[in-house]
Image 1 (cartoon, rainbow, N blue to C red):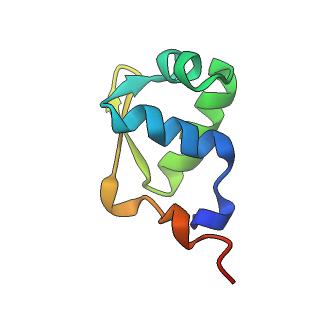
Image 2 (cartoon, rainbow, N blue to C red; image 1 turned 30 degrees about the vertical axis):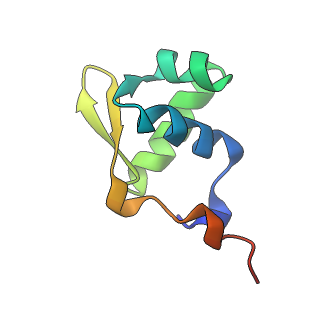
Length: 75
């Protein structure tokens, strides 16, 4: 997934995870989305190795795989 494919919710999830590991309900509360939608987006981010599951519902970012947001929409 590149930066142009990322949704606002994806960036909000990554912003929460920048502070450290978290689970879907905590991310949802802090990002302002439903827990179900956050779980759906986490699944997509996991497919692209942008986040990694740590077990027991916890997630963390994979910093090497996070797209550069500033590079999107530059053409």
